[in-house]
Length: 538
Image 1: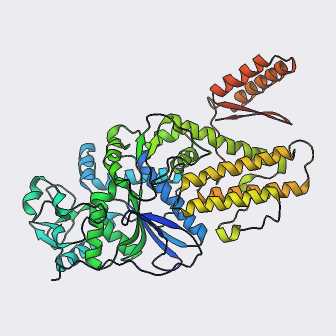
Image 2: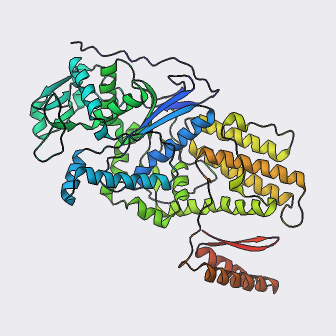
Image 3: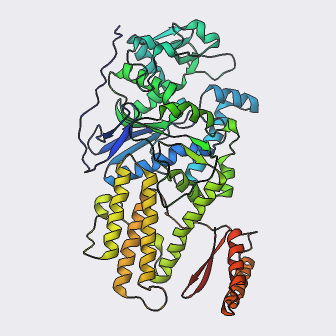
């Protein structure tokens, strides 16, 4: 049996879509030109949840980020296959199901449904495959046998372990040495050759879910599940493997060892790791500027332990995600998660979410303004689905020249390692340019010039195009109302608007300002327009 470490030289195939895209790979600690394994096609794998408890906001970070990444790759012209696995057999599931007095399968089904509901709420609907570990037991057993046959794994009293000493490349992702590994303790320690060896297959204990295998009844280890599912669907080498920074070690390190020793080739060309969510010490400004840019030259590995300690998780008191959806619009949460560079930690607080909501309200007010001026719905505009289809010649038009420049800066930001933080700032700048055009050309009130309306519609369509890349502004947002009595709220607001108008007419500006300020404190924004004053609820 051969125990040689396989060759790990990435493919040099060229991509078909024309792009300057560069991505930061944790494996090399550098930004690299993006060149897929197969020209024009991208395979992408993101480690999904262990479905033993309801989702919290930390579980949504990766899916939202990689949903935007897929959307951008499709925008560039790639055909993308995205896989997110579901771990539905695990020690945590066994323990939690026993505590609830239910079966592991029933608990996993319930928590998977919760996870899917939350993805749908956030508009994460571009995932192509959701493989479950329990549906891939045969493939897991087959891959484990390959590793034993090649001398990289060994059976021991019903368990199967990967022998890290046989893989000379082990630790290349996390930059750890085999000497620093501790491994699993308990009764496993005595069955292993080395403390750092990790389980591929675990012999079943009495009463635990189990499957037949050449080593007796048991269940898969955590790491082998992802190696089996990713290779079955995407192939032995695919393009992008993603996950949170906390998965670099041991999960992704072990995935690489298993996959590459079994197949003799790289598992993934690019390893992308998103920063973790932390409780914010203080609120910071959202919108208008790209926030918290990631270090472009090296992984923030030194911050990994602190991020793991401070990350939001169920154990640190994070509420269920459905509770969060009861307090905030899904689009607010999605925008919030995309407002920073994906490799940076996300500072979470209710204040920051509210600031995001306030910032988004500027877009919603413009959509109403656009409808008043043009007679058309923003959401009915037909925006380009790809970069090539969206290219246009401004033909010397001042606004469209500015729009084209901002569009290019948006693309440059996304080409720079999917910098959604910088890209979203361009949406705010584009919004400002469109509002300024409406003001300067006096398009509200009276009958606007037809040519100027065409210019405004073109610029607004570009805003819809770029927002679509982020999965934003795909449909109107349902406005929450106080107590559910829309008619009463509307009547009261109309009364306050009339009282304010009367006060201003009588030059009682103090009373007018007081009404506006108190309404702002209550989450209601007044806008004075040529046709009258309008109000929106934040």
